[in-house]
Length: 105
Image (cartoon, rainbow, N blue to C red; front, side):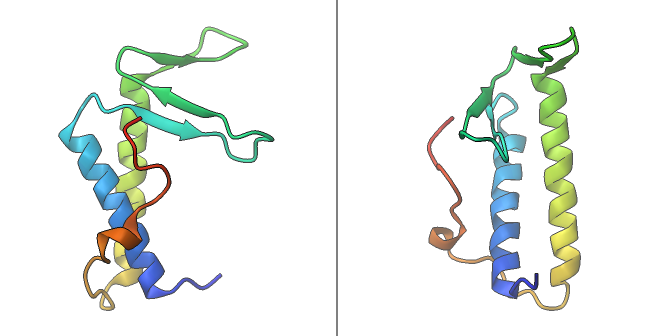
């Protein structure tokens, strides 16, 4: 699928804003949705909480999940930066950059 430069710029802008939010607030809740689920459960993970496997005592605490999200955001932004190199015209207007539920988790 070929994505337009405008679409790539908008996605990069969203990712940058999300990264900035997490970097500015080290306790900001992490919210997740389960892809390919028959329903749309949303999970909000806050500081001091952890995900635990239903089948073992393996835990993914807030700090670990936060590091994973920050790393994933940085990698995705870097990939978009490469794709947009030499074709960038700045960030899109905020109203076009909004994604999903913009309320506080």
